[in-house]
Length: 165
Image (cartoon, rainbow, N blue to C red; front, side, top):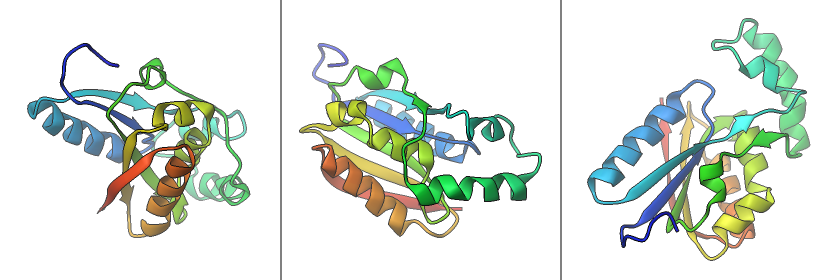
């Protein structure tokens, strides 16, 4: 558990290349804190050597080339190397909220990779979780994927929301 207090403990696990998901997660965390919750933020770091280098700079210097080169990773649906912050691994949260940007109609590679990890299954087992999808327009498949993978880890899905920009 986060602390010995009786405050609800909420964890936000997110990825945010453009920082839009991060801004949304931070705003939601502030509201939950103002309502008496203990809130932790855990940004997943995309470290896979095949792809991570192109996500170190924003905006991408050659966006069309870089984006097109990510399509095989999306289509393969295989987990990629990520770094999971210690705050995420602690567990004991009452609610886990996934901040999930949409990449090419689906859940982005870092969040999908996390949801397929042993750590995700450990922190979600018997816990409630939700998802916040940040996208331009295609959000349904992303939300369904987070729900499916989180439920597979033993979590109980309690609803999700999407924000389009």
